[in-house]
Amino acid sequence: MPLTQFFKINVDGALKTNDSMRGLGVVIRDDCEELIAATTKPVCGMFTPNITELFAIRFGLQLAMDLGLQHIYLESDAQAAIQMAFQCDADLSYDGILVNEIQVLANSFHSCFGKFRPRTCNHVAHSLACFTLSILDLIVWLEDGLEWLSLIVTDDVILTS
Image (cartoon, rainbow, N blue to C red; front, side):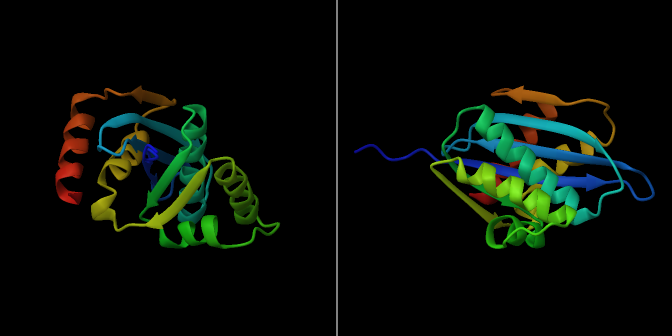
């Protein structure tokens, strides 16, 4: 029986102090650490850091679903957001609505796990989220990224190996 191929998704959110711009960054790699997709998306709103991170988690899962991936391992450097998204029951607060959306998405995969990782292990997604603060629209890279993105992915693989 062939081994199931898992895809690792790293997500992060960034924000500018005293500004309503938020940035979301997502990186998806296969089990050989090869870049499958990366994306950035600006979001406008005075969201808390935790809500921004929940938006990033939802954005990463939505991209994985759009790509038809079935076995997902999602990492974020936002421990509270990971716990809310993968371990809590949703409520009717704004956070709860996002958590419910994330859980519905997560349940649509054959397998989906979320894990907290320190920022040193989430450098690519963090760099993308920060980059997003300087753009106005969604950007998606499939398999190949910009040169600076490819360099960060390579460095990240070396650091986490």
